[in-house]
Length: 133
Image 1 (cartoon, rainbow, N blue to C red):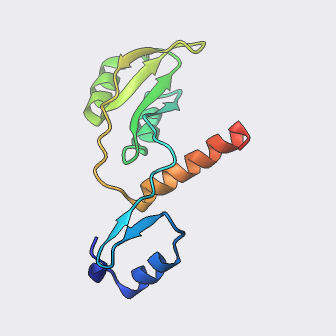
Image 2: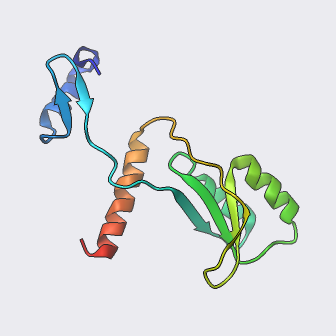
């Protein structure tokens, strides 16, 4: 990105960043930082498929997503139609052995956003605390 296209405020922020975060050749700035984690699939447990559809839909900007239901609901035809429409996978089953009823749509990153970075940082923090790092 050309430095000339940045505001004064943005240039001050860049000047305070630690070494290795970006490269500066005098005219252009290139970000070198990578996301700390990559999320391939978010799986949301749900008792009701409508609630699960809504909850899983919140992760659309960050990852492929699916809901895990305890069993197949009576109105499963409507569930399948809605899940496919929104690209949300449907898993059902007990005791850690899910059956894929609707595969999740592949995730395609549209752009890098502050919300995406925050999502990755929070997830990394949770994983690191569980791993004892």
